[in-house]
Length: 284
Image: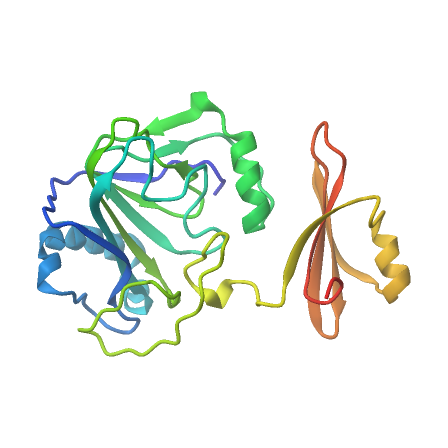
């Protein structure tokens, strides 16, 4: 699969919600459980959740269903003109994971883009690359109230909200991991006690199990500060164990104290070359 694929459109569902709410990643099924469970006040979503769960089982199988946590995000709020419930700019849900997300909204539908994206497999660098590479003529929008199934390859951004107004947005997420950030909703009908972690200032990957360790630093420096990988090799007597070369970037991976660290040399058109250092040791 490639970045820029279109999601699967399941068609229109006429769900309606009349109660103001903001619910973020509420667990409605735990891994190894067979069915979803949520409070009565969310029963207005019974039909759409049932349709989504049936599609997931049909598409990915009951084994994956049994192994998955399922999360509900539900927002019914006034959206001021030119504002958004979610992040601005192009991005992809579940980047570098096999998480599956279903989204639905009754207005201001999500905008997808079918450009053939060439992305660095890093959640911070790739965000900028999506913005740079996305071509406006490749935008695709589905009708209001469409259920759309996403994987990490479906690049999208929030829809046009210039008119403003009341809006309902729903997302149902399937993952093998715990979404364990402080602020996520707690389901008191399910028996679990997770240690919740702090949200970051930048992108919040829902599952901290795949987030970077708190000590890892991500720093952009110019080549005048670190001219080439030979500086690191001479200073720390390192031997590269892996390299990856593309047209506009090359990566060198080192092994230090049993852990691997990646240096990405990223060259952009009409810009001074930069070095992206991802490590919790070199720059400590």
